[in-house]
Image (cartoon, rainbow, N blue to C red; front, top):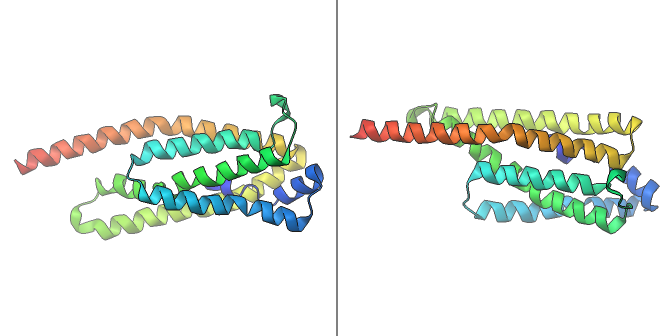
Length: 196
């Protein structure tokens, strides 16, 4: 997921200039739409108490769909249009907040069942370290891969490749959701039995 956010940094302005004849200043304004909608999404999701892992899946799924519409890929038969790209980018920014905001609490929730209550601080430090290391890897790989892919393919196709990657990530994450749910229920039952 972290790869998706930084993926557009080196190639988006070039795409705007080549495809829509947008000046570099205006492309900067357009590129600020996703961070703005991310702020709104992060604020809203932090206020809602929902099932974290399912919400992460929904967020990644919507982001993947917006990736396909960002170009859009010529396979869809839709002509590239600035307003369509911007709508997809706004949706991307808003819904990428779901996995970004909820991943750390989800990691902490999962790790808490592996640590004793007295080791709560260790649990939080480990979760934070894991989250930030994965975030950094994604921030590195995003621009690197986008530059590499767009060297050989056009922007719309590279967005579709990222969309396919996100869909595969979502499909691979689904068993983890059910496995963690089962483990959490088992630990809760075990804790309840110990209290009796």
